[in-house]
Length: 202
Image 1 (cartoon, rainbow, N blue to C red):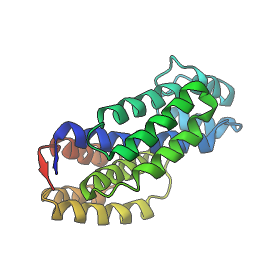
Image 2 (spheres, rainbow, N blue to C red; image 1 turned 60 degrees about the vertical axis):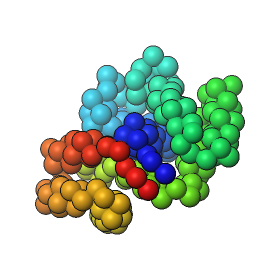
Image 3 (cartoon, rainbow, N blue to C red; image 1 turned 90 degrees about the vertical axis):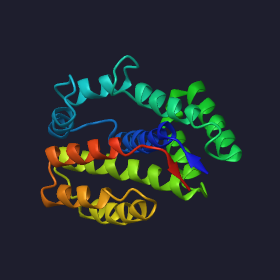
Image 4 (cartoon, one colour; image 1 turned 135 degrees about the vertical axis):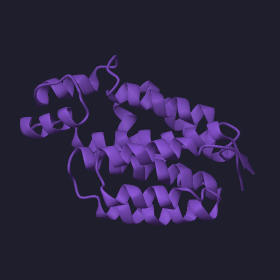
């Protein structure tokens, strides 16, 4: 198949948004003020304690809220119609409708959406989706000073697979990122990924 740059970006960002929501679901509601402030500072959010952060996450007008992040994921799914399998798209649509009827289902729905997408047989789609997942994890781990060893190992394998698919400049850029895994090197590598979303053939 032919995967256009917009499709590659959509599946990549869908992986990021679903991973972001799933992590937030695991932390919410924040109860410890110190942990809440760590999260707030890491993501530059306008909150000052656990209570205000919880209110922000539930406020549909806030970009970092469950609602807004889910809308981003939903838009990416709709843009992938005709790219993912008909069965997967139908399943995802049913899940999206559940969450729209009851916002309390967002966490469960995102996990199920993730499961559906991981069954896609198209190797390139799976690689870009997985890359989005792991880049989101690495971003969070760097921001929150969490251990990233497992994520780095998993990215090693993904970068190697993408190299075999023709994205031959990724390994060198990734090695540079690994030398100093901080926010600056991460964003440099992330920008490099963005520049590689060109026409890809499978």
